[in-house]
Length: 159
Length: 159
Image 1 (cartoon, rainbow over the protein chains, first blue to last red):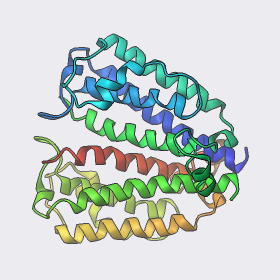
Image 2: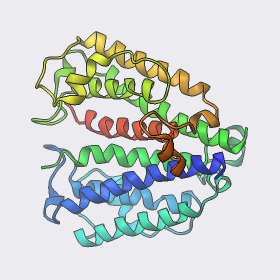
Image 3: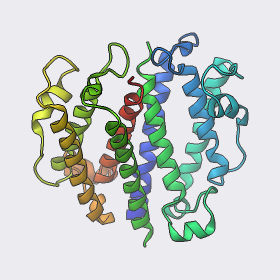
Image 4: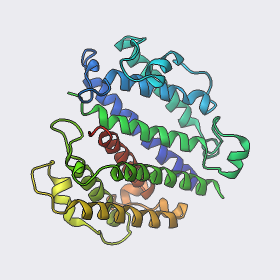
C-alpha cells in the first residue's frame, strides 16, 4: 500500500469504529428506552439517533454520492429542538434508517481512492477549494466521525 | 502539496478543531463550576479535564515524542473513577497542564511528515505492525480526537 492509501484506510477505520460503537449502544436499548433522556431536561436517545441519521444522510449530496435516503428527518431532528415536533417515524423504522444510511455510506467510502477522498465537497466553491484543498470529502467524514463521537458520549449517560 | 500531505494536514486540522472547542468550553467555566457534574451522579467537569489531560499526556511516549509531562494525573483520572481519590492538583494547575500538554503535542504533530504519521506507535509490536500498517501514529491521534469529542459532548451538558 502507498502512504496515501494507508492514511485513507486508517481514517476509514476510525469512521467504522465510531459507527460500530454507536450501533452497539443502540442495540442495548429497547424501543421504549429510546424515549429516555440523556440527562434531565436534555435530548431523548430517540432524538440523538434521528439527528445523527439525518446529518449522515446529508452526506450523500454533500459528497456527491447521490440522492438522500431520508430527507423527512431534517425538520424534526436538525431544524428543531427535541420534543417541539412529533417523531415522524417509529423506533423500528428509525433503527432501519440509521443502519441503511451508514451502511450505504461505508460501502461508498470503501471504494474511495486517496484521490477520491481529496475531491472537494459540495458546500465549498471551486475558488475557495483552490485556496484551501483541505475542504475535501476526507475533512467532512472526519468531522462527522467526531460529531458522532460527541453524541455517543451523551448517549451512554442515559439510564 | 502531495495527496499524502493534504490527507495528513486535514486530519491535523480535525485534532486542532476538537481541542480548540474544548478550550472554549473550559474557558466558559469558573474554577468553582469545574466542580459541577455533567449530569446527576456522573463525572465532574474537573474529572473530565483531568482525564483528557492524562490520556493526551500518555501520547508523548506512545508516539515516541519524549517523556510525559504529568504522570501524576493517571491514578486519579484514569485508573480510578471520579471522586474515589482527592484531586492531586488545583483548578489553575489543571488548566495549565491541559494547555501545556495539548500545545506541545500540536507543535510536534505540525512537524510530522506523512511518513512520520505512518510510523508504528509504541503499543504495537513490530510483527503486528508489519501485518497491519494502520496501527500507526495517525490512528492514535484520530482515536484521541474522537475520544476528546466524546467527552466534549458530555461536558456541554453540565449546568
